[in-house]
Length: 224
Image (cartoon, rainbow, N blue to C red; front, top):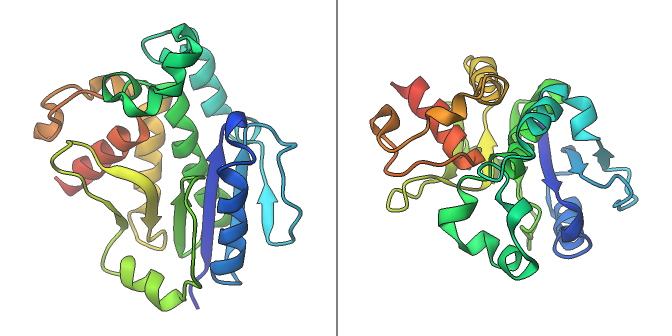
């Protein structure tokens, strides 16, 4: 049977809802042998279960902390710092703002990188912390979604111009897995995300710096 790791991360304000139901449904419905790695901003936000492991992401990934320290005071890359509460409430619906929030969405990238480095599974799934799992998920279904012939599975969104990354699935047994994650990290350690402007790689119709954009950039680079 293939080894499986599931990862998610969340900001403090999202606990207990929607995070707690997400974690509980993952524990209840994903395969019993899966490793579940949780990366909360606040390490006190926990569900007691022998199925999960809690990790301080910034401590585990110094390159993430260095990236945050470099850009946290830049309102272009961390737009929430100059928003009032009303603006913050509608933040996720305003594409013109959130696509540039490199700081917030960097946590997802490094959670994937850390989960891969830490467990080296055959298959890695990242789930946004607001996703609910309603039924038992068999390994056969997961293997159908991400077969041996593919490296990654995600929700394409060609009309919008960047992928929907509420979940990622990675075939981390693939021979190019290491190269993918190393390149993805370089977009943050070397600030390569600034390259993702309109027309970059003949792919992007708009500029953006979220995990969706850096994921697409590395994927398109390697496909080309």
